[in-house]
Length: 280
Image: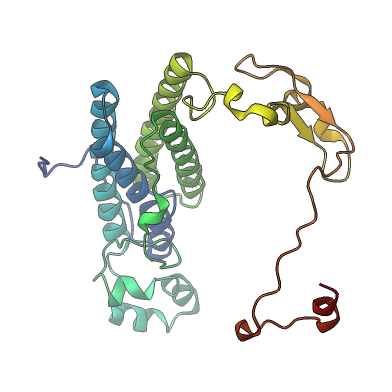
């Protein structure tokens, strides 16, 4: 069960309204890598975790914390929108400088949410459940979590430099610190799972099960102009799981056939080259 506590995890108190910033903050609330995404991602991974209570408990801990982060951002957006009433916009329009500032208000903050946060990104696109990853494979999911926290912290850091409001920055610093810890956490989980099961997902399908395709699992195919890619460990090193050494193919040749699909029935109404059809 979940239980709401009235106090926020960290204090949210802005120095002055800033509707334009409120619109930008929507990205780290309801964007692809926003707090709504990591909240739902960790919770669904936790709900669906089977057989290892340690990982399930961790996922539920962090997923629940992210619910609190969503609430913090909603509080932040609301404070940034204070004073952004429609009549204030009309008054501000009389002054070109003020009009430029108030013109940055997201209309939906006035029309839809009544000066509050919304489950949308900074362009007003609704949050989507398609953003979350919950595969049931712990290593795959933990790597996805690390990616999500990496992108999310990057966006908060960019927002940090878009304002001089010390109150807003104080909130962002708390979020940056937590996102830094969460990256540490997912790194630790990934390292532990890799040590247990190997570095390739899924571990239940080992390289030897690939049969005649095994050699291709170690090849780097040079398929763009230049050969700078040959200088990386991905082309000259060894596989992390010890299955062999990488091989750089400077001029790889195709190993497959030329596809020759059957001509469909005329009722499908393809625009076909009749000469080609007759040759077939």
